[in-house]
Length: 216
Image 1: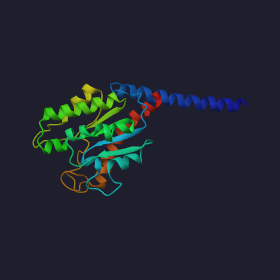
Image 2: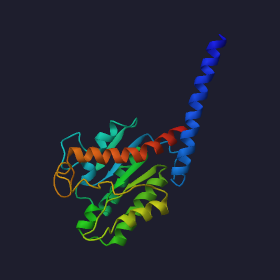
Image 3: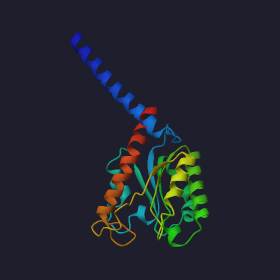
Image 4: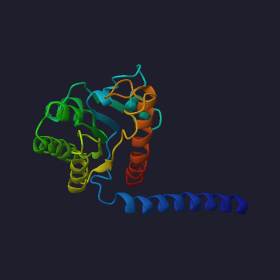
């Protein structure tokens, strides 16, 4: 009996040490993220065609790939052609009603192609972030490199994430759309490209979701 008690105590100590180490690491990396104790039950991927999965076969979109890596239901709330204003208009009906723990926002490409003023895009994305956070969920903002000669949107994503306490996944499509092995056309990945996008998103959000689980 003494040996059993010692074994159980040792296992409890190992689990506690791992949990404390993970929590400490995450406090350092994610302490500015709002709603780290979120009790939502889903992960919602919210965006345009890059979230919907245009350019890939069914089940190859990045939310589907992500769902196979996470222990939460993952909802694909992507709709091709959406600007940030279009997405904002459907936020309540297609995102917040799912009681999200984390909303992964990937928007901006259509704003850029339709020449929406940058300050309007910033305003729309800020409202999306604020409304998601007001619901009690965390936000991960996926950054894109957009601009003909300079990166016009990278600083915008970085500033929004910093000001609003969102997790930034920067330049998530780096090297994808320029590689014919990873892209279906000049603005959409193929299945392999979406798998790489999903892996980048997964590496960024998994520790944050693990911390929310520990805090819950």
